[in-house]
Image (cartoon, rainbow, N blue to C red):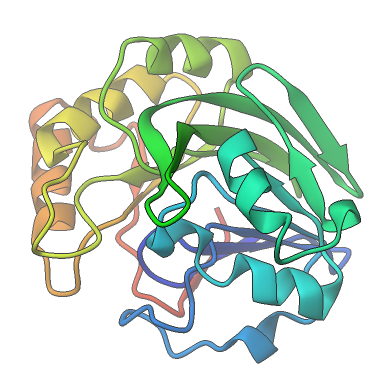
Length: 236
């Protein structure tokens, strides 16, 4: 499997058979990336953790262009009904399973809201563990720390983790700080071999702080922590 980072929480996963998944595809207004919506014509499925601009992003436009369904939380699905046909909206809640061509996912708890201010709607965000291309990817979206993350690691044995370590913009406070993210990394270390820090502002030192805290916890040599530049691709 190839994992391409597009900045913030946006990832593109491709398997050896040419299937592609997107997670939290904030593209057009994302200062981290030069990618465009036109680059994602062949997407099979889009995963959205919640309705924030930097996570829902360009999912509706890409879904229409690629005829790809969006896996999302209930609150986001309500708003998407005004933008997309029903067959492109797949609504889930914590604990459910989802599957498609070449992938299987579990929908997991996240301690973060999924909110739309203009529509006056608020619900719960979610995370995903996705089995795809020989790896099991745990994308935490946006969350604060909570103990069941360790339980999810034990239950679903992720091998790759996309882990938030900051905030999307310098004007915002993180919900998961680097030192907390390092504890999460320790919880997941029994099964995870690669961790990619994500969800931090352009020019932020949060990824480096996270790496330092992981080193303090003795994770160096146990887990491969890769600070990816936007537009680069990793084969975990």
